[in-house]
Image (cartoon, rainbow, N blue to C red; front, side, top):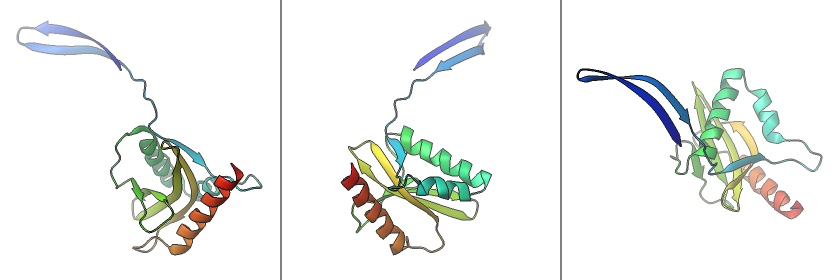
Length: 141
C-alpha cells in the first residue's frame, strides 16, 4: 500500500490538504460459479432473480469473502455435518440469502447454489444439492 499526502501547518494545527491512496489487494480467496454440464450457472440464475439492491448486497458480501483474510461468521461459515460445505451469508433488510459452495485448494471457493432463507435452519435439500454439485464438479475436473 502506498500513501502520499501533503500537510500544511498553521501554528499548532495541521491540515491535511491532499491524500493519494493506492492499494494493491491480493485476493485471499477467489470465487467462481459452478456450471452444469450444459454450461448453466445456478448462481447467476439466482442473482438474476434478485432485485437490484438485493443483488448489490450479495455481490458486496462476495467481495468481502474474496478480500478479507479473516472473515466473521456473519459472512462466511462452514456448515456442520456436511461434506465440507460452506455458506456465504447475506442479510438485506428483512431478507436473508445464502450461497452454498465448497473450498478447493484453500483459496478457491466454488459456489453451487443460492436461495432465500425462510427458516432458522438451512434447508437439507439445499445442502444435498450443494454436496451433489461438489461431487459432480470434482469428477469433471
